[in-house]
Image 1 (cartoon, rainbow over the protein chains, first blue to last red):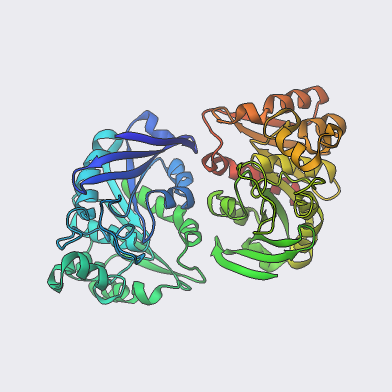
Image 2 (image 1 turned 45 degrees about the horizontal axis):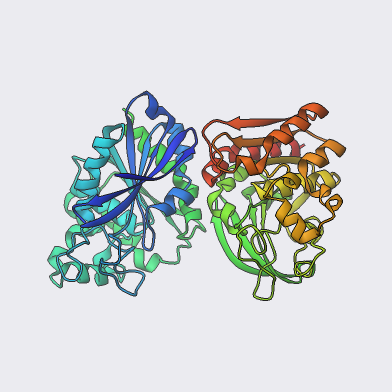
Length: 275
Length: 275
């Protein structure tokens, strides 16, 4: 583990780490924010999974989460969105390959050697955070767009590992969207039965989520057709899933949207994690 | 005037504009944040001048000012730091030419045709903001690094135009720093008497500032030797200038530092502008 950078932020420390990942078979980068309260003992931790084209840095610099995490006394983890490197398979499209891991374990060539973001988050990085950071065994998870998809699918499949769940404009029904069908077919192959465990709407329909869920979605989001919040809303209502999807008037898909509701999400997780 | 982008942010609007500048003889870009309160009538406005290598975008996306401006009900203006374009003189160094206007009116070739950032801010953009935005005739000014230098020198020379003044890690004594001597000599020539009006410490010594001033400076700033806060602190003390220089332990020169104290500065200006 190597420290790439360290900056004081809101009385805490924003640190970027680089490590050799066994799961992804390449070097991976992630960022951790430790609030000032971590000096006095372990704190709960909120995972933030980023969207297409992002790496560990975007939300760390543009999300505005640190201020709220410092107020609430919770740590933040910002993983990368895919394996990286010259020897890692890639595609010219922005929505496949590097920057677009979709939080799955790829089973098809040329992706399967490195594209194991599901295992990387759930097992390898989860263990690293637990072992190397002053955090409690109280984890929440959120994310934006492809990262909202990652947060929801990972939480629903691992309710023993995550206590609280929220999302910003998640890709909610990827098995029925061009943000999903293309990638799931490339990474997992044509057998669509293997896709279902990576679709929030289908997972919610089958398993539900043990707690309540908070989802924010801008009404002026330029990618509404690809995100399909209506499928998730429909399933939440049918299943009587506790939680709320808030349609935020005039907000788009940008970090200005994420930043605006970052305080709500951090407080919401803190209420559920600080018990 | 052309709208380049518009994003809802904290109930207000973050807009980027492009216009043909008479002063700089090129196309210039600037950003304005209007808080939700601007819908009900004109609001005071806080100018934020950025530092070396930045354009209008850095603080707009990484400074975290909008949240505080929305809470306080003040507008924000983020100008660019220099003229731009293929036909605009430049230098290979990051600290001269494009991205490094130093908020002066250049008198030497090849700079004098476009590098008129002092007049651009004080006159052209100031008038554009007053005429096209729902703002009161109550302006505050702040900035970071080279932009802190710009804010302090511009405010002290134009106390009729600005009511409140603060700075983040300003270049405080450029006539005695390598961040200053090189640029002032390139833009203004070798007659050092013309440099004094672009040095906060010298201006403060001669004129003082009509109000109190708030300056934050990280103790772990990697550029402390170039910023020279001790010269400004010395002059403030000698002159009994109302205000405070706060040395913030462990903070560096990054946007993590700016973000951490953005709330304090916005509130501080709001207290002085909302009267």
